[in-house]
Amino acid sequence: MTHLTLDGVTKRYSDVIAVDDMNLDIEDGEFVSLIGPSGCGKSTTLETISGLTKPSDGTIRIAGEDVTDEPPKDRDIAMVFQNIALFPHMTVRENMTFGLRLKNYDQGEIDERVERAAEILQIEGMLDRMPDELSGGQRQRVAIGRAIVMDPEVFLMDEPLANLDAKLRVHMRTELQRLQQELDVTTVYVTHDQAEAMTMSDRIAIINDGELQQFAPPLECYNRPANLFVAGFVGSPSMRFVQGRVEDGQFVDPDLGVAVDVSPSTMEGPGDVTLGIRPEDVHLADHHSVSTATEPTTLEIDVVQPMGDELVVYLRPEDADTAFDSDIDDEEAVSKTDQLLMTVDPGHDLEADQTVEVVLDRSQIHLFDSASGEAITHGLEQQAEPLSR
Ligand code: ADP
Image (tube, rainbow, N blue to C red; front, side, top):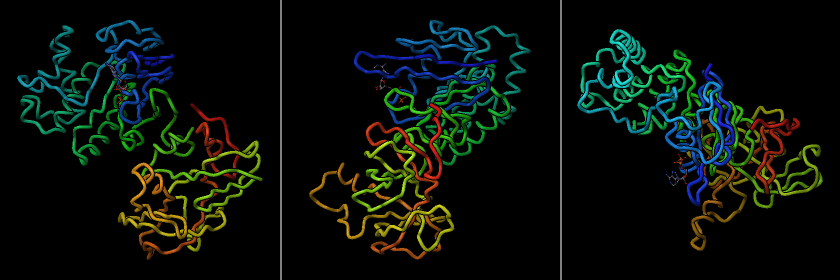
């Protein structure tokens, strides 16, 4: 059973805290992705698991054994990196068997493991080729094959698909999923691509500034984000936020004019609250079948983006100044254009500057404490439950 645990793992580099008190308890056979923006500490966390970096504090256990001070070679792990780094002068077979030969496995065992990995990865016909005779996707498969033959307790992968083109990435994503189902090896996977993490993982660990924000199954992070960071990070187009206040059981905001009855039980008193709503949960008031709709709000269409299967509609307050104001700086312009978004059927005839009445689905409204960023409730019909962190 390869249970992997990080207990209070911290990594400091002089004045930078790359990883800050990370606690992860990863089950045997689980596929866990570490995601977050560039520089948030994903790779450093992975390096502490591999042994390439020693944590400043905390403990790492693989299969119950404290490996915090063990060098990488004494940990039963195999790594796949973004830079594939195959030996250019060795054939695919030689590349794949290199690690096994170093460990003095007998030839029969080596052949058996390579045949099996080659079959799983569908590279049987390429074993005698040189790396420069392979495509990018084939090279990446060889790199994964090199990890598979080691038959490790844990796979560690750092952005292994980042150098592939978009179409191949999607294809390899499916292959990795299939591989995981077949091998059932505990895997920690670093990516900044939330779509990759959402589709492949049993659970995702969302990290910001070295700190774990939420560690939960992808849909839980999507439906019940622990805080504003997770809410804005997971989902595309992302959740939109409206700053306002709750007074006398009403959420009111000064800019968009969204007024929503919030269950008084979810709030202890008046306070600054951020309302979050995803584009798919905003609907045209006269074209929806939502039983939990808010009262209509009148807004103006700023931009309509046809995506083929849907229209993404940017909404702004009625008669608002547009963001094309020469006096505002870039940061202000971004916040000004951080408007409500609505996705609708492509059949609707909508255009810029048109006034529309929209409703929000109350069951999909998220409220956050503006000061701390922590979630207060998910869905106004129900009471907030304790969040998994
Ligand atoms: P990510 O993988 O999420 O992009 P990293 O783990 O690479 O982030 O980096 C986290 C933070 O630690 C960054 O601020 C980075 O600059 C810093 N960092 C990483 N490695 C080193 C190092 N060897 N020396 C100093 N700072 C480092």
